Amino acid sequence: MNFEPTNQTPHILHPFHSVLLDADLCVGCTTCIKFCPTKAIRVRNGKAKIFEDRCIDCGECIRRCPKGAKKAVSDPLFVMDAYDIKVALPAPSLYAQFGTAYAQENIFNALLSAGFDEVFDVAWGALVVTEMTRDILAHEALRPRISSACPVVVRLIQQRFPSLIPNLMPILPPSEIAAREARRRLGASSQKIGIFFLSPCTAKVTSVRAPLGYEESAIDAVFSFGDIYATLKRALESPPIPGRPNDEDTASAFDHCAQKGWREKQHPRRLPIMKHLEPGMGWARSDGELDALQIENAVSVDGISNVIDLFEAIENGNIDSIQYIEALACPGGCVGGPMAVENPHIARATMRQRYQHPFEQGTPPSPELPTREQAHKTFLWTKPLVPNPVLVLDTDLSKALQMAEHIEHIRKQLPGIDCGACGAPDCDAFAEDIVRNLSSVEECRLLTRST
Amino acid sequence: MIIEYTIPRLDFSAAGKASTDMKRRLTQLGLPPALIKRVAIAMYEAEMNIAIHGGGGRAEVEISHDGIMTRFIDHGPGIADIELAMQEGYSTAPEEIRDMGFGAGMGLPNMKKNADELIIQSELNKGTTVQMYFKLPVGEQ
Image (cartoon, rainbow over all chains, first blue to last red; front, side, top):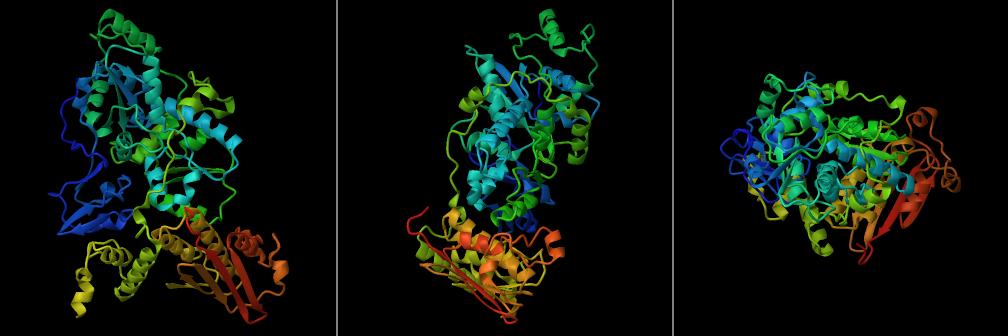
């Protein structure tokens, strides 16, 4: 492994969540509780506390915390050492982390210099999802259908919009499809193959450990852009090795290098660099999925609060004419992910500039996409998504009604200014906490002051 | 439990607030998503009706073991011919409202479709009361 240890990302392996609090940095300021879309955070004894059953790993608290006390957790790079063949699965947004100066081939090259043996682009998985989405829209009548590519959106629907579960596309996410395909193409081997997803997304870390819609992930670990950034940047900036062919066809150039022994690798590369991935690469930013899909009456929405507003409107039944929704929790799409390095607006511009694909010339030649039958056999969800009942007060309706009435009674006595001093995001949530025995009415600073 | 809402006149940014709040409450009660969606759609239509036609008004929602009773009350112009108003596509919404994408004449038909019972009482120049009842299905999940 050529990566140097980094202190950027904490690597505390947690079974279910990839957002973590650094208690030393937290000052208990209540900023995060206000922005959490699922009201999953409370301040207790001067420190933020995440209710893990409510957290959907959106990373909003990481973005909002003024003290940097919320951290994205990803896998430590050393886990690579346990594998003979190390496969990098770059998210399309990786190509937007280094400005427009470096082409896809340069970054491909840098990944190999950094210690990966093979590279397989997640953009390929995105192309497969696009084809499958077209197919499902053509054969099923339910509208609007919602993209399931963003794991935060899937978790949000599961918890807060369970009536929209049937609207989600039952298709594996691009990273998972790419991982399975990379494994298939590499074939059976006596050597241990490790598939490593390079990701800007906290929720993907959770998805790999606790998948939704399928049993087990083909991905072995998720590395954050932050952890690999410095190494890749150095590789990109280092002068080309003398005598190395500066061929346009980098794939053959690499093979040439491998033959000449420039890279002392035990394993000859088997996955060539892929071309014509442009529509899949576009998925790095919002609108990218729709650009690839090219269908009418489709809507793209990014940023978690905008996603929530749109879903509320769908549930109210007033936007039936929409066919398809690309919903991305991060502002600007995946380039805005909590584990990205480059400014999301710059990254968006980079992607736009580099992967503007000429649709008027028709679909580019597809890089060995699976047939419809293969795709449906291999890349659909295999497990039904069930509602997450964490918001339900009690499974017994009488009890739940009683609690709801109690909450309403308490709420009416509260000041209603949602100051957050009690540690709950608003008076509604505070009243609910009291009835759930998670807080007590004395925590209300305004009530205690006036008595 | 009775929840009350006020519905301001022609305020489309506020329209849907009652329906959205009710969805949250019904989700907390663990009711089936399909039922919650029916209530949300019907309530949203009723809210829009009051905002567009009724000159503003109020809503009351009573939740009990048996079901959800919603009442939407306004003191607007009233509905001249309820039977006609129930027809899909029939609308008295003025041009500027239709230009905003509302008032397509699907309000009452949509409410009828989604509620288990719909009762409309209306008197010209006095106002309209729309009652919608939703049964709580026993054992439906």
